[in-house]
Length: 451
Picture 1 (tube, one colour):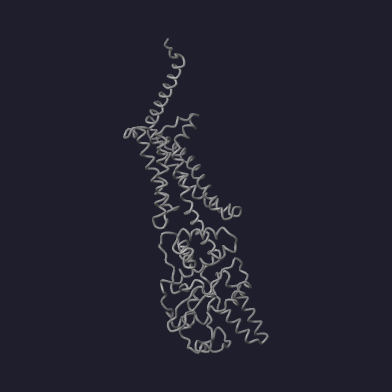
Picture 2: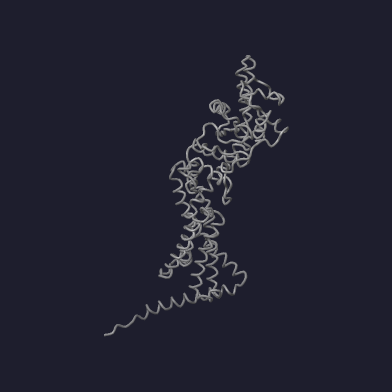
């Protein structure tokens, strides 16, 4: 990165005679000898910058990444870059940008490498504030550039191949010869420089001055991006996982809400082996919980471009909406303020908290991993598969969490105030006995038919 930045200062010092034919000179040549050169080496540029810093011009902010700061940096960098490069197909649509991130991240290695190259350009601009995107997204051979007062801009080509094979990069350098600087991941720089040094030594040994000069120029163009290929891959992986989690957040929360809606009935069936007959009130309660989740998810999708979806804040907002709805119904079912004197009320609240915490946490992780795991099998349908799995995992994990929360609440009550819990249990047993006795009497003493 330092080498690429310093290349700018030297261009500001060179005279207009730099367009004359190039003559090979060593990297350690004095600055005065640069006047007859058609290119500037990065090594010489470093010395020039030390002698006269601040040679770079001020970048046009319109050509630099614009980040709202509401999502992870790598996500917003990619969204901004995709909107610039595909302004007709994506433009300012965050949803379309995320779909592109997901789609290209799940496809073959060539497509993944392409979008990683786009991220590499954005990351380089983020770390180098005087550089900017070229105004035309389809400009040939130049990806980013830097303004130099009084001189033509300095352009850079950025390449990020999966393999560090230097011959692949060398072919790119010969084909994309217009850029002043050729930037590659830091861990690919050494091999590429070694290749061009070998070609330079071979040309000099044969007395091929023209080829030696060409090899020296290519060697001088090479620079590092300021991050390795692994760092780039890690940043893209995080961006891809975040986009997946944001996309499927609504399915996960719906599954968790379903667990809260049916949790009391399932828990009763688990304990007693029977289920109380479904009443209109219970059906309305379940519908209210699901409606609260849907309304909150719909609202989050329209706040801040959906930036809250799938994140901790978004899950807290959705979970709170579901919990408040369930809390209101639970109080109503237990007689309003009398609910606070009921152990069952507190155990159900513990179940709701446990169900939401476990369901939304586990579901968020599972929906992302399911999408990535099934991508080789289902291809473009993997995100939909991940959404279905996310809904199911949210519901199952939420149900388990509900049972665990109910149990934990009862254990706490038993430790803090055992009489309070035992009194409620005794009342429940007495009510069950009374119901059984009533049924037995009705069987033993059938009503006499009137004749």
